[in-house]
Structures are given as C-alpha cells and as structure tokens.
Image (tube, rainbow, N blue to C red; front, side):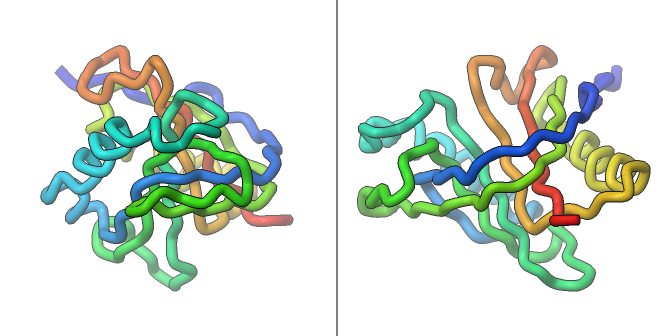
Length: 168
C-alpha cells in the first residue's frame, strides 16, 4: 500500500543567518543512496556531536547546497550535503568536520510526513507546484531539521524542510 506522504501546509518564514558544523559529503542523490553516504555521515555525526560543546540545539540539520548550474539535476549532478548541528558563528570545527553559514533568507517551510524514502515527493511538491503557484524561485540551498519526530523508516516520521527562496 502506498503512503500518503505530503507536505503539510507550506508557509513562508524569514530566518536569520545560521551556522552548521558537521560532516560534509559531495555526491549526487544516486551515489548518496546506493553507497549509503548519507546514512554513514548521519551515524558519524551522531557519534561525534558531543565534540561540539556549544551546539545551539540537540537536533541534527541536513544542509544541501546546490551548484548554480543550468539544468542541475540532483540525481545526476553532485552537490554538497552537511549533516551537523547549529553552532555559534565563528566556531572552529573539530578535525574531520566542516562549518558552513547560511545567510539570512526567506524560506518556504513544510513538514514531510511518512518514510524518508518518499521525501522526494515532498521536495517535488515544493520545488515544482508550490514555486510555480506562488511565483517564487528557489535559492541554491535548503535544509532539513531532524528532531524527535525523525524516524526515517517509519510511517510516523516527520521532517521539517526549509527551502531557501531567491530574493525578490
């Protein structure tokens, strides 16, 4: 039986800049899935998050940074993912980790409900239908918050998605 995963009421919100420290990978979605790169980075970050004593939240964040390239396609083209924690700006990363600061931006925020394997449907709804319907364009990054509701293989999984919007 197919899940009824869908975004929950997308809204536009403005967020200040934020800095994430964590494990970085560079690959396309096919490689991330087939080589379990995301799962390995997630497990590494879980085991190392205490190395970030000034983290601002216990939750993990997945930041995805896309190249500004015509015809970019995440299944084929490599992009950067960082799985980490929010930290104060200026934080020096422990060895083997990276730090990245996201600029202040407006985001479309939605909640994915259902297994993580169906997350693409929620992203497609935001990047496709929502952007077109609302006359907006995405910027070159987005992020997810993996909090206490994050149960990737379960039907009751929930992930908050934040897709950066290009400035008007």
